[in-house]
Image 1 (cartoon, rainbow, N blue to C red):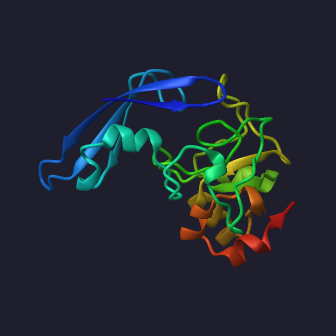
Image 2 (cartoon, helix red, strand yellow):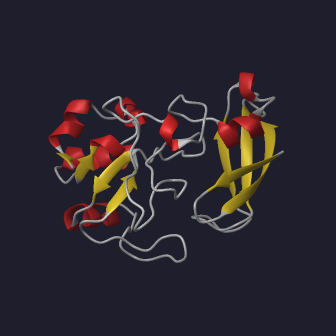
Image 3 (cartoon, one colour):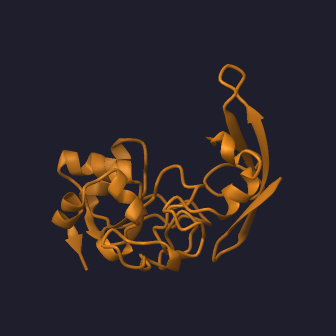
Length: 193
């Protein structure tokens, strides 16, 4: 099977194979990245899938959305306020698919749902936990500075929130999937335009 992830920058082809875990007979999908992104070329990423999706694993990985729309069309995704998902940022270009949207798809295991305006305090916090967002990694990652908008993992934003260093959030550009991890009240406390 072959699945593709389209971005505004380029199309990244991946080789996909389905295998079963011996002990549990749980199906896994393995994607090998043909073009570098955050992993080196040829590295593998495994994801558990349900038996009902095993037959169409490649199609499911390529086209379904975790936010329930069944489409990679950002206009089909909803924000935490119930409206259409708005663009977070295109300079620097953000989002798991690098299309400017904090849209969560089946390929986004980190759930990059939070449209945040990063602060130096947050950048220092996440760097101390092993995720340096300030250092550029060309060509896909320019490095962030305070005031940049960026799609953050829901779990990291929640961790920062609990530590008292959560950055501001653009609610209209935050995917509704974030509500599975963080309350709307917590997001509203940190809301910005």
